[in-house]
Image (cartoon, rainbow, N blue to C red; front, side, top):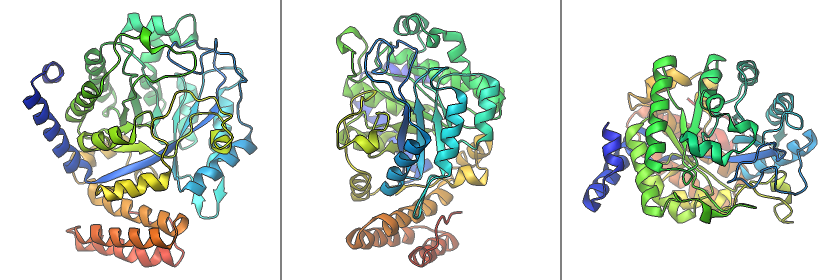
Length: 420
């Protein structure tokens, strides 16, 4: 397998060549846009004892799940930041955080408005569950169902998930099959790099992607690449496969080469500097202004929350947006594919023609200006409008270019949610 060979390359010149190839793939498929999102943690009740997680059951702290009023408050804060896309996160606890609670949270999020603010896409990251429960999630109109395998090494998997529900390797590994059987078309995978040999993890990830493509006609919509990070009650010295920065860059690069049309997600576990580097080689989505504690957005200033892991990038969404623009990227809050039915196999058919950016770029520019009109001051609005006009001028299709330029006036006049 070619990917296996790439994983064992040590020659610096060849590695640099890989970086260049991955960078070209990223530009050809995604252009210069970067999708922004934020996590929303609704419950830290958990019956599992994952050795790498701050929420594990043996950690003694005041557990909490948000009431619907508290969910609404968190969402309003996120909307005030400008977010349109959330990743709903929760620990696994069939009693305190059952599927009924998750479904109620989804309804509450979609029904919460803050002036012009509205969450337009909810991706859901909850524990592996049944076909029936996945069907109920799908009926609520979720975006992507996300589940981290954590590790594909079965022996390591059992060691890091001792005496708990999540320790069922086969049930966890087949979760995407059940989700797609239930009608969820977009699924997002990931491993927690640092638990086992990263080369094995990448190969296993690619094999699972290939399995889904063969069975359902489409593989992963997204792949996340978290690295093991310090957390409450977690001793990193006990993990022999921690990734250094150079190996991490190599892993991201190889995944991008292996799956050119799959979105790649990087969270605020990584520093601003590392995120900037990896945007060049493969990452297409980043979180911004994140809190990883339950109720964390409201309590951020008070410092009360217990985080699932430590953050390395604490910039606000505005700071992230300004830094992305400075680097020549288009920050995007677009959620149009999900709402126009460009999902699953349909999305991949368009993506593989490398024409998806004909929709993504104008939509990204429009959502960026919408952000500036609603949440920016006059200085930011002027900067963003100038940036949008410069980027629009590079669009070859005159009809698409005019769509963007007309949207500037429409947004200033009060229209919202404009997309192709």
